[in-house]
Image (cartoon, rainbow, N blue to C red):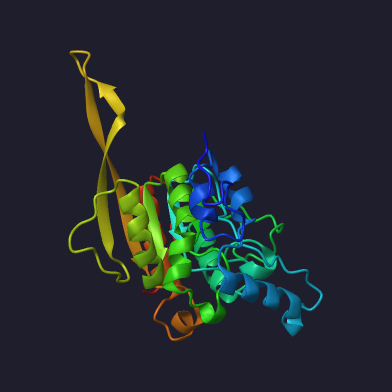
Length: 280
């Protein structure tokens, strides 16, 4: 029987308990998307995303903004995940798809396309035909935050959605875009049973941390017909966020991102296209 809230009923969309209660009960990523897009658990984020959707930016005055939580995007069985920060106010909050409609997304999808993991180099609308191959893009916070800065409470309230998404996806490698995503993801991985080193690994661009998890549920038969546990590995790769501040200053260049995505794809068992003639 389902648990109930303190008032004897399931938490409503505006209750802080809504993500934790419903995310854990989702049996697939489609169901997760449906519940996630109903969420109104963080009053500040709800007010901001809806204010932006109502006032709009002049360049998008004819748009009907999405103005809701933005779900992850990509195949439900992708062996590679890319974790960002949160939707942009006039990007994902407008289009309803992660990294779609803003400069950061153009930078990311251009690199994914260059290595053969995306069908096109740009992302403009949720129905533009873009497909990702073996890659799923998501974030620790699913609503656009003011000044792109979620509070720790908002991050923690939203965490169950990411925990369930990563658990259901069960990727072999994860690229984390920026320190915020890195710090938000580590507790998610710990909750999923991955053994984190102590002290916890720090974010740096190009950092690679290999985590292990015992898999007793996926026991294999030995010669004596007994069962033995297996061990899974997960490769966590740090990458500077493709924000305009980072890309305009050259802190993150296209060759840097392409090289890192190729490395991550290799860990995930994905084939990529050779990209030659790129200066580091």
